Image (tube, rainbow, N blue to C red; front, side):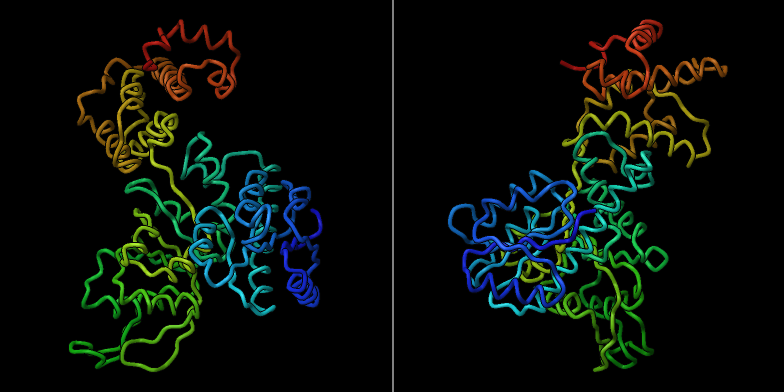
Length: 442
């Protein structure tokens, strides 16, 4: 692995020089640039450092530089330095992939702290890449979040990179897309895996008890509080707190949560004592929180600090080629859950599944798999499959059919993914009467 290095980009010579000196005194290796022109020459897939750039510069500005860096490697941490009036621009940058932003004037200690966390993340990313390259096989994350489309490959990659860190994370996606599955995966591959995972549905908490539920209370804090009680935040100490649909959190409570997020301390209702809080926060949202900020329903400062890392969970509409294989996996899981034998899925069912819209995403597809296994849709014809040879043949037929659907009828990725020859694929398609034109809609 190459040497960890900070690439510092700022057109103001005095600020650039003083910042570099302060970072070197903190133990960092720093290379400075007055423009962004030559920075990209040092960025590569194995680059082990961090880029710190002023957001406003003549020529190539910080935003453009960040975008070009992400075209090379999306996991290179880019920290943007902003002026007081650039906060909204910085938020946009974080949404588009910046690691963090820091406002002028800043102390060297503040910048050094952000850089250290970014360096730790980059080290984990590079280490995970090496481990995955050595392993070369399917892991638990892929089993939980299957899919061959690029959006799913990228999602699993980011989960592995972010999961091992303690970075607070915002997960964005449509209802039923699998946001909680992603959150649990982040927890389970972290050092906190043996500690509690506390899921809190912000939309379901009773308004009159929400502070007590989150922060806890002392005896006598309010009518009915006859004994002290831990809140969910305190109960999750050492572990992970999932704030599901954080956009539903009442506006007045958001300010109190911001303090928790920044200072990692809480006070129970009815007490002035400070309780340290060692937790990692993960939040989910099905709505665009920037829109909520613009509408005055969500605090901008909370959004800035909440999404240290952001994961976007794609809807099924964004990964249609994954639907057949995902459905087959959900059928296997449902069969095991209901104590049924493994079931073959007829090609015509797979074709129908692949062509339908799934507004409820994976949740809706899972329900369809359950109905199929339980025979509630009237589509299964399992009586035609009797002996072992028939079952094996029907299973092979369904796998080939689903692969044809998944790859849009293109034969090369089918026989490559199934690890068979082109000749063998043709023979089996003829044997099972599979016509790609009938399986794949034009």
